Image (cartoon, rainbow, N blue to C red; front, side):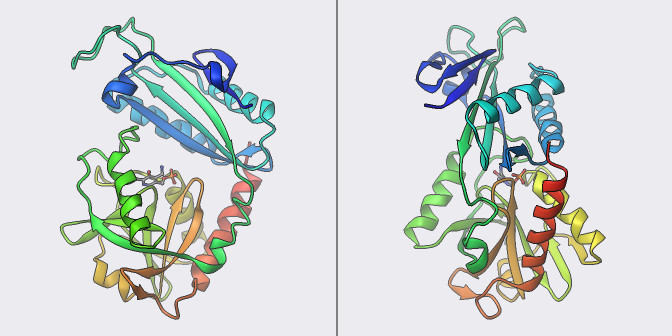
Length: 285
Ligand code: PMP
């Protein structure tokens, strides 16, 4: 049985209980992060902590732990659960005010802090990286602060189900004719030596993997253009891919039934995945 973390305690997963009045439960009033583990170490941990702070600030929530404490809890869970490859999930909610009320509770209501691990072998050596994923496009009808990483994940979850029902792997979300991002990842197309991805704004989550991948791409003399792109432009691209903390860099080979290029993952995507994994393993903590 897994050991999980709840409000200062390490507990067997069946003993970690949260109140029915918790605002995470009744109002999706919480934020989260997912950090990958490779070789028993945390990938881009600093990036995730920085974004956690940003999400908490946006919702006027205090950070319940210091950077050192966050690292210690992550490391404890990885060690106690002997995770070699997988993820650490963390969530902070506004806690349990003892009742249901739309107004934020007073400052003395303690936040709820939950962390758990998910072991997943084959994250780095994922065979799907060799064949690529297929996606459909669906309207982006999410709220206007997608840059805050909240646990309000119902529409992304519905998008994933629309993809499943269509017999593909995932969905890209489209607003005003332009791709915003994937259900749980950032979206990119490649034309020649140029990588095109939507610029940062409140329209998309500021992916930690996105930041690292674009930095590595520029260092490798690839051209990066941060701008909107349409579904038609994506279908006509040479390559496409997604990034996220657990998928890393993953090729997309089909969009709305149209194969990209020869229908196989492209060379630039493959190279970026390799660089990303090499560099991030070196910097893991
Ligand atoms: N966009 C959305 C909507 C996401 O849910 C995620 C993953 N949480 C990402 C992008 C990718 O972000 P990251 O690289 O930080 O995992």
